[in-house]
Length: 354
Image 1 (cartoon, helix red, strand yellow):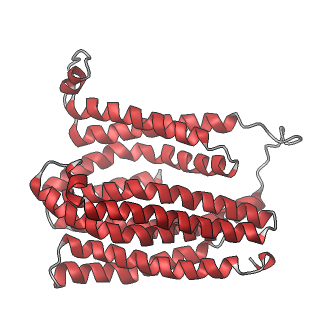
Image 2 (cartoon, rainbow, N blue to C red):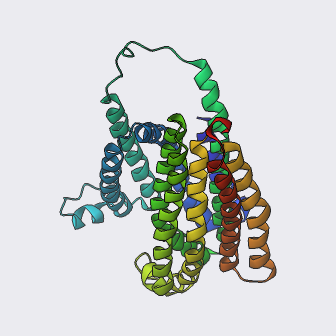
Image 3 (cartoon, helix red, strand yellow):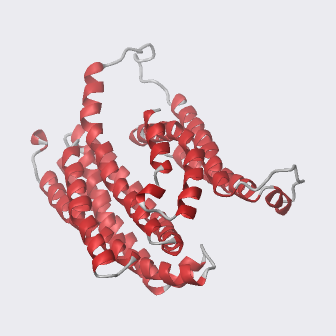
């Protein structure tokens, strides 16, 4: 609930932060519609981690597929109203087009459905023998979860907050920059999702390797994750470099958005690779409960290096939106290099010392 209040407050202050009025107004409508989804999103995050650790990943995929289908239909209907219903072969019911607000409502509905599916999947996992009646709270484990989890949350805040700030800065550069940024970022986020999954899997396997006192499993899981992520992102980077306009054209037909978005997508091809390295090495360190390093490195890399570089390139050297994206790339590269060193040192450290 406090997060919902913060979320709404930030959305209300977008225009004060320099975002152009027409963008700020529509963004606030979206924020209002999305605020209730914070609770189910937290449930989804916790449920996903539990299912991954239990090696029960099928419900995660099923929930994602079902959620995407429902989200697509709900988006279509709520954005366009009766026109959307008629285009799907359904009768009109007097529904007015909701636009951006409808997108937020659809996403909130989808989050609730996805959370219910994943919680039901957890309920179907059988208890281990002798634990059926255990319902007490282990405060020692709660304390450990807090000590390990708080830096993970701060790490995500440092990284996601930096990307969110870049979005706000884009809003100050006008609607064209905002639309181009969002189009390019949507494609980059889609490809990054594969590395995010590999990073989570690496975290689980490293944690299991430490629990089994198997140093080779810890080492090979870390190396395999990085190799897979870099290999996959290298392929997607090549596609972005070869077909930037075609990819942006799949999202927006506007010539200005295609032109500027294509320039951003070329930069995205570079940060795809370093983004994969930092995501997977962070996952490996997370599996070893080494979460403070990932938080500190992300905080310094993004905010002390990436942000100044991006602002200088954008506002001083007049690179515009492309300059902000090179700032993103620089920050990610710094994080990737430092976390790689920490991960390498971790996998070559005796397990008893981890």
